[in-house]
Picture 1 (cartoon, helix red, strand yellow):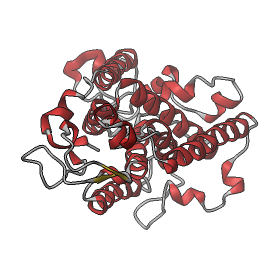
Picture 2: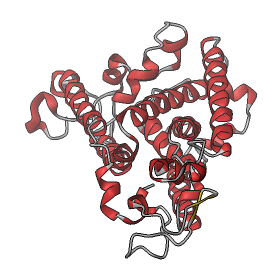
Picture 3: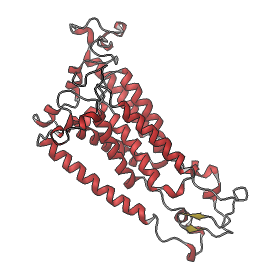
Length: 336
């Protein structure tokens, strides 16, 4: 959330507070504070976003490499002729085989798609990471990269490349782990788990920094609606909602650890008299939430990885969980 949403006092025009309360700390009435009242000040503190654009470029480059290796015209295909043949070896597989305008599943498998058998029995754990950089088709790529630009750049500008980069990568890994525990008979690719991790981090950031924002209820409701809609799409067939859920939970927990905002009084402590300075950078509840989230995250990753490499099938321990990824209807069969 933007620092422009930080609560401001009534005397914004004069630049002086009237005894405003911020995070439980009362600012003296005659205190001059640029942090509260200068709209341009927050912009000067923003980070320059470069890791998110770099990730976008890397994904696009990987898709180009994938299509080059795929070389549709160089192979016979029972589904018909290649799409966009003028692209030659970069042309797409027939739409009957891949309606997303992309490569064949065998090409994705070759380049590192997530596949349970290869991860567990052939000791190819690196697929838990490489699948994040592959996409099933041009439509899949565009949808994910537009979402990443929309969500990721603003987060990186506010919190920096290091924290957002960690959330993105670990969320993608968390999504891959949960996906592998429940899906055994098909491959999975895409950055959706990492993207849902950023959504989860946005939610936990709002919760842990609750006291510094105005319009709290509206912000929470808007974010929850976006999350619910995106998760609801995951119940359609051929969409790996386990990766979405795993990535979301990972990012949600990481947000409590990495996206803490300091108390307003802490930011202005050098301009305050010693008697009025706050002693702690963060509120007590922020520390508590961060510790709990870190413990849950560590336990979740350890248990998930142990279960995965022991060959445990998550469906044996949760007989209803398959509905989280696909709900059968008269129009489609989740088993197909």
